[in-house]
Length: 195
Image 1 (cartoon, rainbow, N blue to C red):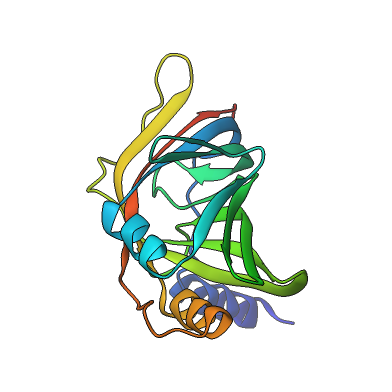
Image 2 (cartoon, helix red, strand yellow):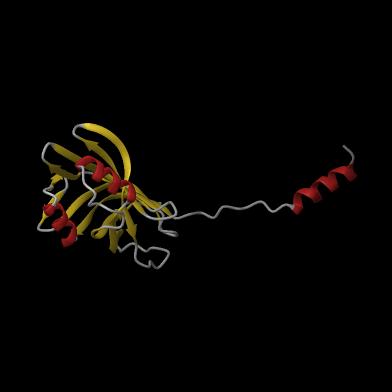
């Protein structure tokens, strides 16, 4: 290859702009808890349908507030994109039908924040479903943990997803559940590790 051709090749390559990926500030999530103050309309709806809620350990229920331990995950402090993993869940029982939803994942990596869960109906695994839609408050970015590396995000509106509404209506033979039904207001608090 002669020198002229080499120069021309270099000029062609220089004409293309190759993207340089910025270094994201993604941190591991070490531990924490997501607490959900359950909406009174949700609890009233369950009572009117004869559905009894209970907690799947190690989650806890104190009054009308359910707490789900955060086990691990990842969060990008620059964008607030995250996957936050939990233990425990909820069990809903009416007559001979029991629906368990557990091992929640808060996922803010897609177009809209959601909470997914593993679902089991009468002992049969259905799979992972989008259980709740989440509406996050306005966040100042980048997120800045406290001096003890704690992040806390509150005022998260939790509503029933269309997939979950259809699944619950089918399981319990009702038509009462609908997308957007208010479930409660959540706060997730967790410790982040080093980058």
